[in-house]
Image 1 (cartoon, rainbow, N blue to C red):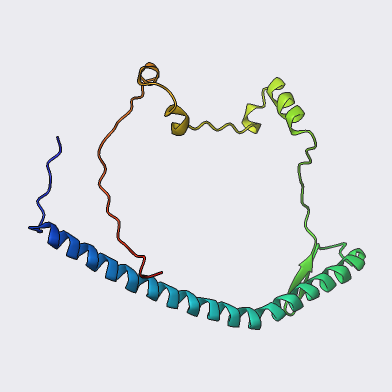
Image 2 (image 1 turned 45 degrees about the horizontal axis):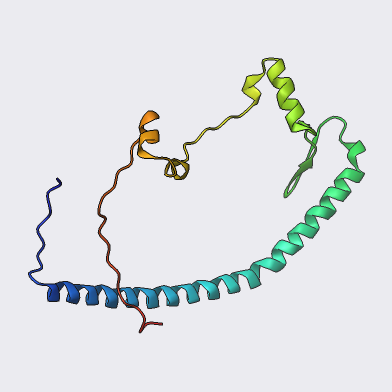
Length: 160
């Protein structure tokens, strides 16, 4: 059996007083967190007010730049990038794998020994294991462990 640590408390009254102190600390912490969250909300609001119009303007400018660049794609014969004073625009080759029927593609990959193209993940479900008897658990190399687990709870009803 595990060794029990000695406590500095000498009576249940001292334990109750410690719970009272935890309660006071928790109330103070919650009030501080509430004040912090209010300040964060105010800062986020001020930030959004300042930044959202700029983000909207950037999005509109990006669309216009893209439209102009695509309309002048014929000018990109020698180089795919046009260097400008404040940046560059251009075109890049990109490729994308198009899949319509994933199940059929996975089966075809298996038939052609392309197993590296298929992701498989296994994970033990301990909640499902809880439903089985101790004897069934032993057959698969698991066992149930039961113990007394300490808890404490403080009364915060007055806070609400």
